Image (cartoon, rainbow over all chains, first blue to last red; front, side, top):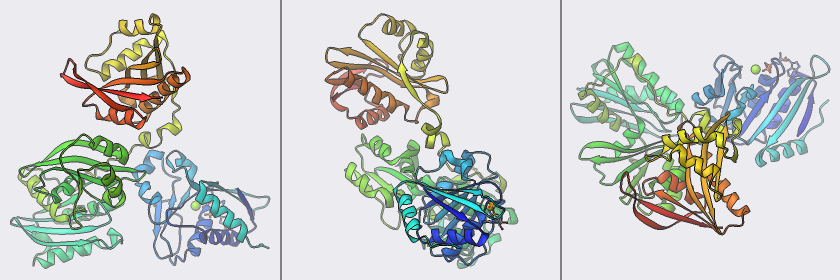
Length: 159
Length: 377
Ligand SMILES: Nc1ncnc2c1ncn2[C@@H]1O[C@H](COP(=O)(O)OP(=O)(O)O)[C@@H](O)[C@H]1O
Ligand SMILES: [Mg+2]
């Protein structure tokens, strides 16, 4: 487990960029946390780190946005509006989970039942003040444990 | 008559135009890029290359799955859009038939496999009788190892094709000596096969308007994908008050079901018997019956309710009877299985049972042989 405190929007974006250095095609990143905790902002950082040039927006209405301009494709889901995990399967989510890109899922807990066992779960919470966020990362599966180890080792002091 | 067909059900995209029975143009692109960016320009190229315009086409067609959900949606949207704008009919062709049609004239069995992720493929077994494509067995979405096992009994050559071959060719080759594989030009679905099948459909009068076309994803239902995560299946000893439910499953599973009295005897009077049930959702999903005779276990019956099949419950029951036999210090387990019940044979083989003999014409209803299987503990 890795716990990081972010003091600002920019820091959250930086943490997303840090993560981008360690991800590989086929990786699954699940984001949970209330509205406004920074899930989309974190994904923007991840996308920026992957070298995506398009503007990354929240897929709340489209459910999925795909970006191909970076080093690895990014599939960005927001499953807030889905009624059930079955609907997720109906979307053809397996093609993304087991595809050639990174899949990021906002509101992943809505479809937990059908997610592969191995994944990186990131829980976002508001901290002690308005601009503080507590970002907790949990790895399920060896490759994600390695990612967290690498992140810990390369963690640069933020101030 | 002019038919324009496309296929976008796998990584490749293709379009073809058949005019008065001859293939006028076919464009096949497998460049790893997305269909949405190329299919319209490919369609445009194919039509123009034949010196035609879109409005000259009589019927539009596309493959309707199974396959890549995204690819299928892109293809169907393109075809529906064009047909709607021009007021032309369309027809949809199942992707597994499209693949089989790539091998028209092949004498053996044809087994298209399309990657469904999670070690699963979409598959149907076909054979050509003359020019007619016959469906031998529909496997729907199936785990690749199960498919290989269930193809075991077929002696004819089996030709595999589809994008599943890229993933599982070695595995298939190592397990099935009669396996063959389509050459590079035929391994993926081709629009010309879609067009040929569209003509057959047209002649049979199966045409649709754009808004009636439905994709057939053969979705793996959540129930099948992650059933065990959400529904706890417990295995316990069978009780007398459960006989009614078990008799019902027995009746739904066998041609010559055991009666209430038989089960009553087994549970209440037979000291050698040991019956277990699998429970889930407060119901009995399946059961297994055994006799413990000296140092051997004889399995009398195993069945799973039709509502709960393909969820690993049969496997759980088999594992549990093996546990019971081990804990009771027995030396071996034996059972009989219908020669044709390939799915059950695969299940037993997976759990270490080996076919060691036959009982000729053991089953009175069909005159089928029973296979006797043994597992040494
Ligand atoms: N430390 C922080 N990290 C991320 N966002 C922050 C932070 N502090 C304040 N914010 C604000 O919180 C909001 C996060 O929005 P967004 O990323 O869309 O959240 P979500 O996708 O979880 O709903 C933004 O308006 C952002 O400016
Ligand atoms: Mg968001």
